[in-house]
Length: 189
Image (cartoon, rainbow, N blue to C red; front, side, top):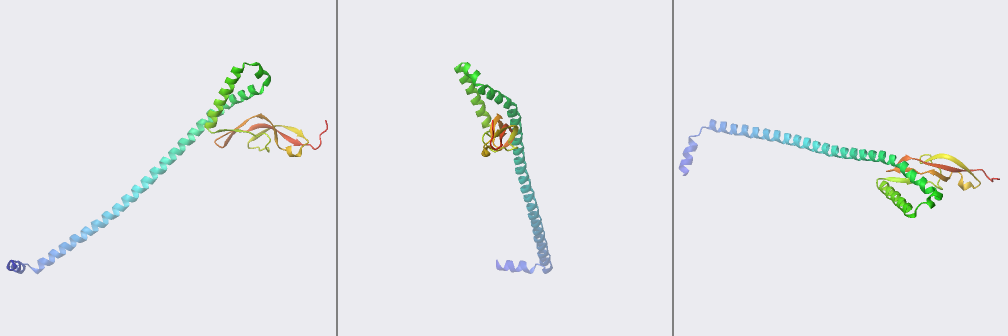
């Protein structure tokens, strides 16, 4: 076996060996170049994929935010249209004289319906502005008149609520209509 190997080596031309080695080196060089190119493409595709994924996530968030905004806007319109119904209930309940004349069962039914309506609206984000005995704030209160007072601590304080105000999800949708105290010092009647 050793003889065979030695004989085959004797027949090989050194120039041929050099050509084979050069050919192998060229093939290795091309393989390395292709590998480098593939790695570059892989990196480029990965970066593109990651960018696209981030853009998709941001787009989904934007769509969700827009959807919430539309729902809030739709709720605001509907709730704003229902506020006069609440005003009608308030007026009916303020008329104590007439309220005492109606059947007790009917009165309790109306109070129950009003309570249900308020609960539904509060669950949708409606808040009633309760300004009585609070300092006048033009953002949440509309000045409907003044009441002279001889108490300094009642100056610029809401002393009467003419019509309730409402906030929806932190946004004022109707200011309360109020009368405030104006300090006049000692009043003589």
